[in-house]
Amino acid sequence: MLSLILYILLAVLTIFCTLSLYIIVYLMYIHWITAHIPGPPRSSFFLGHLPDLWKYKARTGRINAEFFLEKRLEYGKIFLLVLAHRPVVCLADSSYVRHVFINNHKHLMKPRFIYDKLGFVYGERYAGYGLANNTDEKSWQIHRHIMNPTFHRKSLRDFMKNFNNVCDRFLVRMDRIVKEQKPISMMVEFGKATCEAISQVSFNIDTQVIENPNSKFPCAIRLAMEGVEDNFEIPLSSTLLTMFQWSFLQNEKKKSQIEAVRFLRNFASQNVEKRMNEIANNKDVPNDLLTSLIKDGRLTMDEIIDQFLTIFVAGQETTSNSLSFLLYEILTHPHIEEKILNEANEVLGDREHMEFEDLGNLKYFNKVMEEGLRKHPVAIAPTRVLLKSLEVGGLNIPSGVSVVSNQLFFAMDPEIWENPKKFDPERFENVDHIPNFTTTHFPFSFGRRDCIGRMFAKFEIKVFMVRVLRKFKFQLLPGQTERMEAKLTIKPRDGVMCHVMRR
Image (cartoon, rainbow, N blue to C red; front, side, top):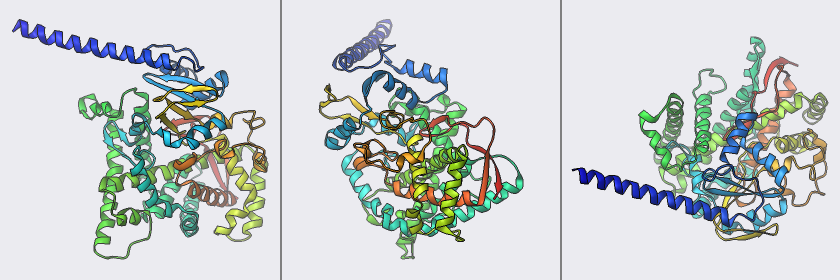
């Protein structure tokens, strides 16, 4: 028996030593093949720059994107960060971005280590392999092809009635807030409105989230997003994170995040099954995204639910964050608010509902919106792995290395935008002088995998912001700032707390 125990211990020790040696050799290899790329010194052999990132966030209260921006300003337009076992080359030049992400897109791969964490929270399937998370190119092409028509500009024209109807309900909600005379978070309120808008347009579902103060959706979405963000903070693969499915490893926070994912997944499943039954029984069904996903016939039940949740969550989260940042900027620049109102009165006259043709005529507001999207990008920057080595900026980037860009690299670049921290819509009066503009200003990403809902979001921002400003005045509470918080997407840390009054 003693000899058996010794044998087992020796075997375990051998496996541990072999694994440790493999990790050490692999890290030495990674450090060797990337040694020629500029970047800050690593503070840890095993964790690379992760301890620096963690210390920065603890010291400043800022987010990952701001850490990356600080290093870009220090080390130039191409630099290396090592995050545990993953070397990441950051690109902050529009020509580099175009060369890598567009001209050589066939030699790029979405890293499963990262994108699986978007779809699974501690092993619980969330948005799964939805459009944003799908790393299989053929599968992604099929799904995107099915979904494209719903988000085409011609289809969105027909959705103006939906946008206006949801906005009507939102304005009623604002009226109640005025009567209550209590300060509210406009970030939270915009989240309810955009949740209802995406539900109505894409799935013909009335969530009642605007009217129901006890709705579970806002809390569930927030907890699920926090779960994804927390997954990213742990340098383990999504597969290994399934260990937290064991209840004895769950604290209250993890438990609530997993329960939130289950609630959202169950909500999506029930609505998909209901629509499937209606189609099977030859009932009249809306010609919306959900019907398109089901009738195509190539998607499994899990894949349909994945796309449902991807659009349901991403379609409301990013737009509500953009609306919130934009309102903050408008309220801190009263002359901009006055110009918006004057233009809206000229374009709309006595009408409350906005027509499709009005969107293009709001020329000044379009500039305000683009400036908001420039200064406050809310979506995750694209991350890919090179399938072959590439020459970028005179440097050889080896195969297997991750490449990433960040909207803030360009938004805060004084070589591109004069006084970039200033909110100035007039800078979008003429952008012809900016080379490679689509890879300089990309709030909805770029290339083949750009955001499918980019036009949807812009239409929605215009309808909601203009109509809300025409009817209500907002006063920011003391202490409100433009500081950012990251919960997968980027949102205003202080919530844009306001007093609301009727005009």
